[in-house]
Image (cartoon, rainbow, N blue to C red; front, side):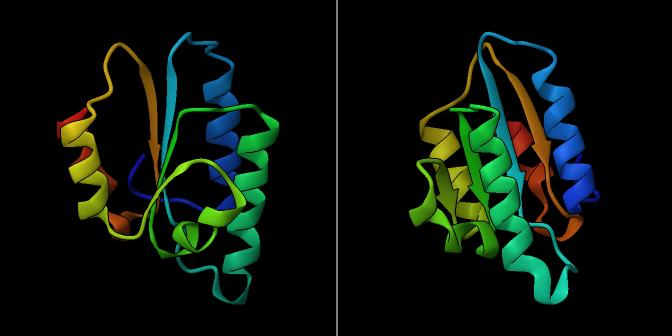
Length: 114
């Protein structure tokens, strides 16, 4: 879902994805835009939600998530091109993957590298 992302839709998508109980699952998440003054706080909440749900394979892209890279052990990329470069060198195989972020971050461009 690379068209819309807000805190509620992000948490719901992650929660539903977890119910699939895949052996090899990945989250590829992009920043949630248009949150105004609450942007940092809402991105922190998503990081904590991911950690509480024990996801290990997580790739984050965007300025807000990148600012939080010291708070977690997830792969974090400031620019989408950096995430593309990583995936070209480290393709994800035999996995179920949730791709979600605001439209402006253009996460759909990563799908060709999965």
